[in-house]
Length: 134
Image 1 (tube, rainbow, N blue to C red):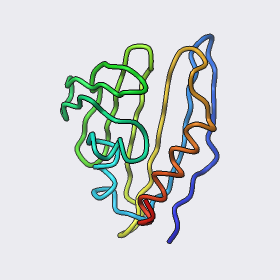
Image 2 (cartoon, helix red, strand yellow):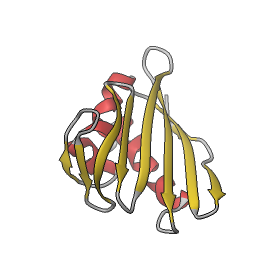
Image 3 (tube, rainbow, N blue to C red):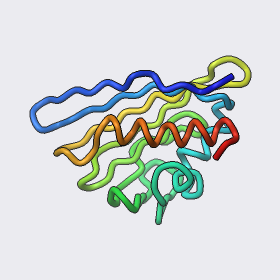
């Protein structure tokens, strides 16, 4: 089974931008969780997490984005990071059968520093990792 990235959607409300992606991954959500909720996992496909306290209210520092707090945390399901200047990133994993999962991703931010293309490239790296190529 191959992973796939659904078309991302982008919304703008004033100066607030919201990107949504639906990514199908050929790994169980429990196996994908470390990729979105550990420093080593995030560094493998997105950016190094210099600090990540894995709990609601914990401190997070994403090297290419900024520092802030863990604003949602449900082990194996939801990791959400809100960073100063970088906005809110939400990773929501769902089961997709016995051997796959779906990642519902949202990035809400101010300004123009992120794009749908940037996230598509990141999710291609995540999909390659899930397929055992990364």
